[in-house]
Amino acid sequence: MAESGWCCKCCFKFIITAGFSALFLWLSLRTRKPKCSIEFFYIPALNQSLNSSSNSSLIFDLRLKNQNKEKSVYYDTIYLNLTLLDETRRLVGNLTVPGFHQGRDKKALRKESFEARGVDWKAVSRNGSTVIRLDLATAVRYKILLWKTKRENLRLGTEVKVNEQGVKDNPHGITLNSGAAVPVGSLVRVIWSFWVFVLWIIF
Image (cartoon, rainbow, N blue to C red; front, side, top):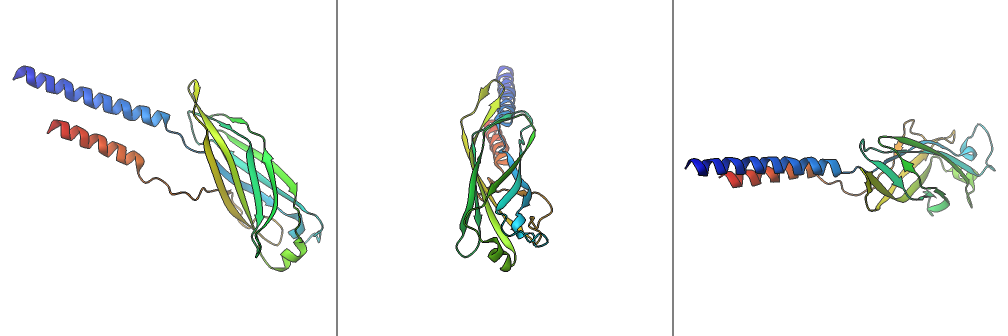
């Protein structure tokens, strides 16, 4: 009986240790996708105080934040599409941002501009508020210790409302979202499953 109790005790300790080790490893390898936001957005042609409707430039600042404190990020080329959300949903331009490496828990700001094509901004401004859709597409890899993960696709987008001064109506940064469903309580499910397994072993 004593030997049986000792074996059960050792087995229980092994299960607990192995479970917590697996949980710690999973938390260490888990990655968080970069957070992207529009910090500045300006269309000079829509600035009614300038009366410069012939200026077809569009200027914006894209902020990318690595939310991983222990992992760096490698970005592939970033593709950006901008669409005017009117009756026809016209594409006003697209551009690319060269890929780069971002350190752990770092931020990067990319100042971009281009000439919008095929848009009569004077006519657009007469329709009241203007909304531009910005879509981002790229792929990222994470560096964990000495190795890199496989590429993960990153597809994000947001709508930017532009006011009479030609700048974004929202004074704060506008976060780009994936629109995909967020997994509910994945960590909670892992912990719950582990303790159910432990209790099943004991009883």
